[in-house]
Length: 393
Image 1 (cartoon, one colour):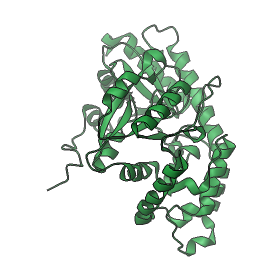
Image 2: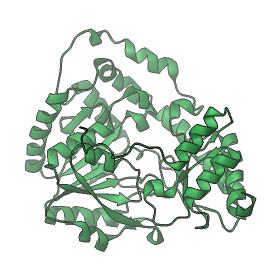
Image 3: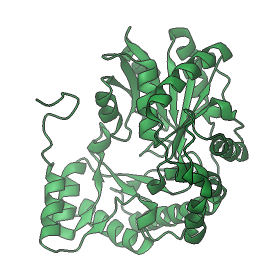
Image 4: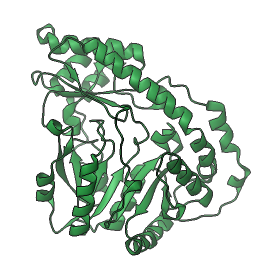
């Protein structure tokens, strides 16, 4: 009686079962996967965040499909301050980036149509696609080329039902920004094949490698339709406030038609609450404080892992250009899945195996750079010991 848009089985995997068992037993857990900035000991301007919720205008309901203009202007000002000026009239506000994806799929796809997504990447697109009746096909990011796009493989995935190419910039969990050469290739390919580009840039403000000069889709000249997604969850470290947005870019005629259709979709939902809309300008003005605190934490934890793994030839933290994740590479035996299971069962250390992100290499695991530094040190030490001396486990 249930929709096939939901999974056939909701049974937990082995790692989830081991974690639940440890919790039932009351045993300690050292969690290296926490990515919620409100629960990682990062200092945020709490009083100012709360004060922004007291706007008396919330007592009146004045729905706008695109979202309140004042909030859209604040979003545009934020991006302009980062070097990417945008038109508030091309912005649409949603309750989250996930909802913005759903609207994007509704705009571009009929049931059974396809979108191309990067591999590896965060394991959300299959779920969001399934909920909208959209099929997901993967194209590879190549580790030997610093996670550049595998162009031949991408083009081989395009079918008559392909509607869009999705990007995550920077990628989660590789921490790699989209290469400038790949941008030029993608905009040309998308225009020629009548595809849209969807660029998820929720982590774009978190550049950890100072030598990198990333390129935002907001700054692109493109003959293809480009939808750029972001939100408060990462930009202001406020996942609980539920505000995402999308920007429409590309040729003016194409953008005009897309905007008209997107406004029709948004008008059917009107999802963003008035308190969040009226508080958004103040929260965005505080975003730089949150960003600086998060970047400081990420760099400190990255240094902690680098130091803890120094000299261990079998353990290699990969270079991180941006975002909140740290990718580590070790031996393929034990696999990342077996390693994660051993760590939680023996040491109470929780880490994400690479197969969660569809890595072809079995030797990858992923940790959160928001982990408190002392916990990161203990976790990195346990990880090194497990990888270096697997017989001890």
